Length: 633
Image (tube, rainbow, N blue to C red; front, side, top):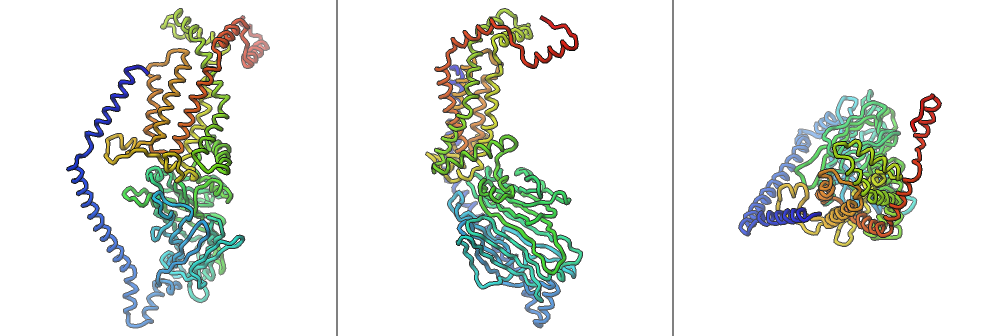
């Protein structure tokens, strides 16, 4: 790096500091901003109170027909009106909300009698970024219910009807081994007919068996019904500190029956329709960065319409995920439709043990990157985790392990650059003899020299290119690894998020949108060591002149990545920083151990030997001889 470049970088830094100080508000501006903030907060508070009043009014409007019904002349008229509106489910049309708890040592589920659905789901071993209980489902932000038509052509929505528990207990704790807790909620239709939701929870499991038991529904549900509609809608809550990052992982995943797992792109605003029989689904998952809610069919879903909707003006929610699912139905007196729920972490080993391809919810990349993560990175990471509790140390040892695997490629690359470097004087002689205008002749003479001395000009590049799949595999692994979530190391409080050593609230144009309002130290260390590594490689690879602008571009790339990775996982930038340090040490060892004079002597000796033909060239010549073509000497 020359003096002008250094001066330019210093000048840019001074300009940024002056710009930041210039745009910093004075005391009067701060007081004015605080006054505006207080006014906005007051307006928001009043608006929130108004919204609560409107919600209460809406609730009143929902039960208003029942109030009017109760004011009719007689109880008979009241009953007749309910039967006219709800048919066989008239007795379940009115009720008071009640809640029941079923839990084990991992998950706590609160069921509501209205709709018989999970009202609240808490994962006991995890917290949100601000140390609050981690809630996957919370209150009325979720819809889960069957929709169908009765025989008198009345629409029925079980989400709005009141179920009754079959037992007296309102809480069920499942902690003992080899046992399972079962909780039943029944939607009565009179005369011994009912729809029953059966929840079965085992100890130390995130999986909940969910069965829909139907008794006598053949006389209630329309005769020509071959499938029931299941509507599952959730407002996905924000669980992590970096909302934009978490939003990039939040979407609907779905597995085709006996086939592959696919997803709606997190940035997509389109719905997906799965309609024909060949596209039956096995499960549908509402996936976030580290946690998922999954509905699994005992057999399959006939078809479904899946939709993801962005929420841009909410600090509490990320997206609205909605599934309209068609489930097979046989018009029989007694029928059970089997499902399962998974409410839990996106932990690879935990998901894999269910043998449902749920491990695909962990974002590991595709093609070769996925296999590197599955069969190399994750096994080594889990093995180290058995003996070591510090994830910073685990990443350090994992980096050393990967560098040891890549050591032969790294050594071969450096040795190839050393050969190119000692040949540089001879290349310069060829360029001096052949004028610049005869570029093709220069190239032929250079390649002839490489062939005579036995040097592959691409020998230094190919080994380096083979390392990129591993670098990208780590790029996928660390932001998706729930093991790093809320695990601190050195100054980083959470290795799954960025490690901020300094932050500010002032909005700096371009800088805030691209870099953020904080500085990640591991990101800076990674950038500095990357520049040092590039400089070392440029010095080592002094075989010829670079294309104009390429040298400056190689130094600009780390700066561009610094802007890109400032909001990424500290575990990722920490790994890249360690990898750069080890590379710098390796290059210094290679530099001291490789004797370039000995290499030059060997290359000159190779000139005296006859040029060895490649096997491909020998086969071509042999085929030409058989056809009678004369061979050139």
